Amino acid sequence: MSEFFQNEIVQLAIRLLAAAGLGAVIGYEREFRGKGAGVRTHMLVCIGACLFMLISKYGFGDSARFDAARVAAGVVSGIGFLGGGLIIKSKSNVITGLTTAAGLWVTGAIGMGAGSGMVGMAGIATLLLLFCMEILNAWRFKLGDRVVTVVLAAKEQGVLPGVIKDLHKQVDKFFLTKKDGTYRAEIVLRVPKKEKQLDVLERLNAIEGVELESME
Image (cartoon, rainbow, N blue to C red; front, side, top):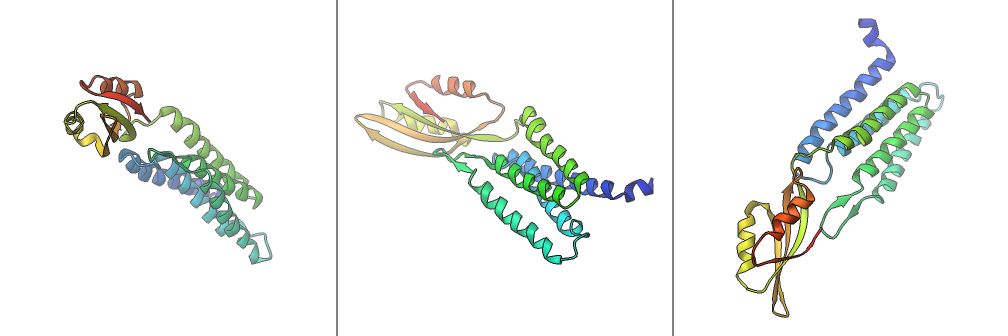
């Protein structure tokens, strides 16, 4: 058994799996808090960081020139810059593209691993990446909250403050305006991820005295 754990591929696999598990723990906490980067994003970033570290440490043993390791540093920066262009912040402050950017970053690490001759490790990392991108996406974690921006309108002045008070802890922030005799409230809500979008729509439409103009 000791010989099995001393095998190079087994050692690399243990490190990659450990990185994936630690990243998932951190991502779980962030996702539970309703943050933009959740379990999958943190797993991918942690796996990628582990890959880059292992490649820098073991990937250039057959190279006579130590300068070869500088290539890894250049790719890390380049892929990170490229991935940053995939991250988008919408008008409702919802951030998208984080997982795609992290996946691109890990893909760069996988390519470096294969190029440095660490094919077995690159294959294991590919399986972990697919697990993050496909299996975890299919399970669709429903923990914590998500952000929804709604615009409510009312004819009477005191209605909207009462609605905001009733929504209580779900209200993150709000803005009140008046135009052409109509009072409007743009409200940023934190609703449970397990609550379907249609259920949120029906719940807001059921509030008496107000009209739901939009929901993002």
